[in-house]
Image (cartoon, rainbow, N blue to C red; front, side, top):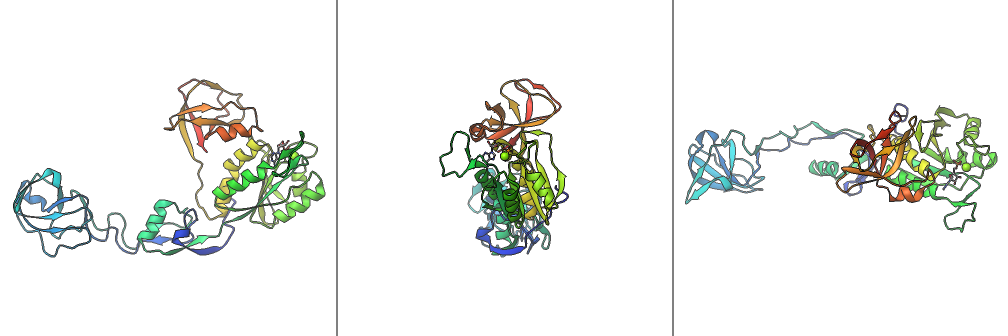
Length: 381
Ligand code: AMP
Ligand code: MG
């Protein structure tokens, strides 16, 4: 999937204030050296390191936003504030806390050349690439754009993603379901996931378990940049999604993954549009989205690199599972992220357990049991 999916949509220009979370469509270059001149990293005294240790004559002061006109000559020091330009011929700063002032003199300890000086161009040289296209704009990237004076920026358009739930048992969330019916929670969880992946979701009407209904709605969905279908991809008699897609000439890249929840996941392309057929059980839909569709949307949206937020934590209690499938089970990470406790869980329909979880425990397919205190992988939710 990572090798196949490429940016779908065009490019637009947005104001910097509106750029957070968007994906950069242009390289960002340094407009000047960073820092543009050598700057002090501390409040203290700018000195010539060869004059230290010693008792130096204070010949002036330089604050952030000011420039010291003269030079620091032999035996001299200039009082300096954090962020202020280091006067020419000074090569070190001593912290004010390490000095003793005595009228127009100051006693300073030994200072190494370069100490507490941030040299010109040390962070970036003028013309250097600071951010490549494909970068997602978070707070630090926004700081970078602001620093180089980008008041507006070219970003990829957000991919438009159709969300199609299927099933005769599915009713609107505003309806009162009968005992054999369930509300269409998947359309809403998927729309939320699409949004956090950087896409724009549109929820289509629910497809009924007939070929005609499923086909008509899949055709609507294929007009988008991506189609997400929930349900109808298992081996049941009424699971029509793959058959209907095949009838529309779809190419299938895979239709099963060795994970639980979510084994019957389908990924393919029809009429030039990628689609995912996600298994309908709510936990399966949510987990397969996180593991696969999220990356698909990010790639469609211009991202060059996709990564899942894995971490390691120690198990609070022993854990075992049946080897063969990699399992992604709802769990709670402790506040400091060091310890993980599996949530009691009743299978792939258990939305309450998914809602209580703040992480998914990743049980590798090859391993059967873990002791309390063992490190295990988690996927942060
Ligand atoms: P399916 O993958 O179509 O066999 O669906 C499996 C189960 O997932 C169904 O029996 C429903 O209980 C549940 N399900 C399917 N679609 C949805 C949906 N849109 N919202 C909530 N639950 C669903
Ligand atoms: Mg179904």
